[in-house]
Image (cartoon, rainbow, N blue to C red):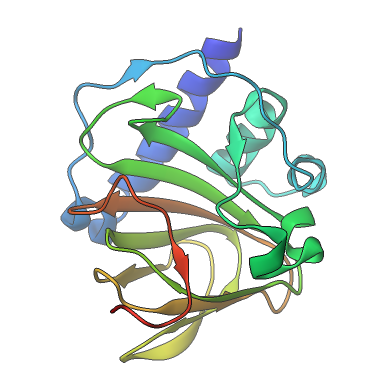
Length: 193
């Protein structure tokens, strides 16, 4: 049953990918995906994800696997505060540590709660966000800030500082990483030296 739920999630994510020219241009969909039975690790935000109604197929699929996911958080309480960690979490859908194993990039589902501010951070890997549900105010060094909703995307270059503010409610995103540093984690701040 668990594997079937994750296959459904993967197919819903692939539908989002296939309907977005920006995602397709960013990276190819991996052809070597194999399911991995990952240990269940829950974060406090899972309860919010499960109770947030939205008709988007990927949103609904994420809710169905929420209790079975290997959820992660990249930051410490000292970096982002206790409240942030209550309203944030991500699931690696595919990648070296994902529910589907591949070394051809990474794909995440990321959730941030209403009113949350995701401070300036950066990472070596290139990244593209696709908003699944909700909306957020995206800021990226060198780009005009924008409020993005479902179906809209924002790309970040290697080590390009960026931040995200949830203004009207929570946000669920589908995120792809590619290139050098894909095995790394985000670093807080704007300094890339």
